[in-house]
Image (cartoon, rainbow, N blue to C red; front, side, top):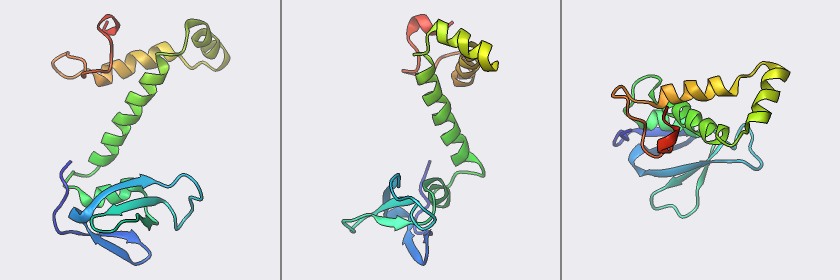
Length: 134
C-alpha cells in the first residue's frame, strides 16, 4: 500500500490532517463509541488524536489502493489469523464441533490453505511448517 502524498484526510468531527503526516493508528478498545473509534498518531504531535472513523476507513482515504483493496488486505489478514488458531484445535474437538453444528474445521483449514497458496504453488513464507503443506 502506498500513502497518497498531500491529501487531506478527515478523522471526523472537524479533524483533518495530511495523509503523509499520519504515522499510525490503533483501534480504541476501551470506551469505544460513535465519537471514539481510533487513536491516530500524527507526526509532530506527541499524543494521539481521537478519530470518530475506523482505521480501515482512514487507511482507505490515505492509500492509492483501488476499490476494495484495503478490505481484501484486511480479509487476508483475518484468514491468516483464523488459520493460526485452527491448528491448535485437536481432532476430538473438531469432530464434536462438526457433529454439534455442522462446522467442518478440517474443510475450512484446507480451503484457507488453498487461498494462501500463491499461483506458483508456493506457500506464503512462515505460514505453514514443511510437513504441513500437503
